[in-house]
Length: 141
Length: 183
Image (cartoon, rainbow over all chains, first blue to last red; front, side):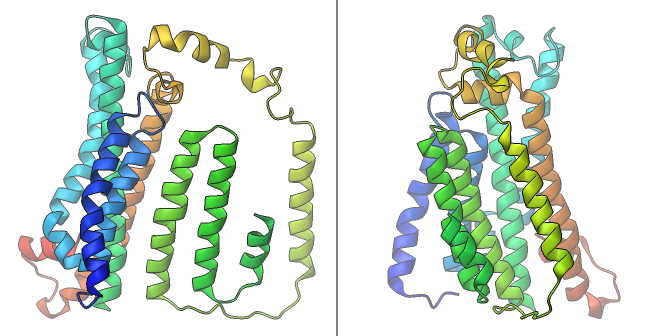
């Protein structure tokens, strides 16, 4: 896959960083504008997929090895449910964020931020995993 | 959208079909923007037009580009489609009009979300506060679904590759091999 034209390689290299940045913006600006964990995760995954499409999955896997992918996949769900459990431990109900900080709205802010982060991590890892599996199969057989 | 839909049915080249379905999704996303549902449009454009297209292309690379032409006439299938379509259209007949303030969806919990979420949650984007806080369980479920989907793909595709690569070793493999041959 490395014999792509230099224009594609240079442009994609330029684009990957802004895409990642945009994903983070969507992730953490979801409270104030459109966006959130799902969209951010997909955009984040798309950046890796673009990189893998141009430079080959082997190069992309050096950035995101399989164990990192699987770890992130599980840790997103764990973060989400962990926030819920933290709500119980701090004297509230499951997934009740109001008790996470001194003021209910601050707690809600914190809870939503963490939960969306969990969603984003899982979605991004899932996208990358599925794409790598598909692409890797095509190359081997 | 109707034109793209018809094109999808009539085209035999699967590559063009994938591209057209991407266009279809983008049109749907624009429709959502026109209805002021930016969050939904965002997701539709990113997931539907972006990731699905890439995954479809990946699948095409593994299989074939041309659809097999089946020229048999199925009256039963046509009847089934017509009946299902008729029932769906009939179901839309008593739906409230778009933007109707008296619609059931706007009477139940929506007023509380719109009026109180500023005080209760303190997040300007109501969609986010509904998604992550009021409907936290739903979102947790959705995340678990995505997690399960990825695990399923891992189990299906990852394992087959491992067997494929390790045939010469009589199925005995070290941890390192396993790590490399699956994603």
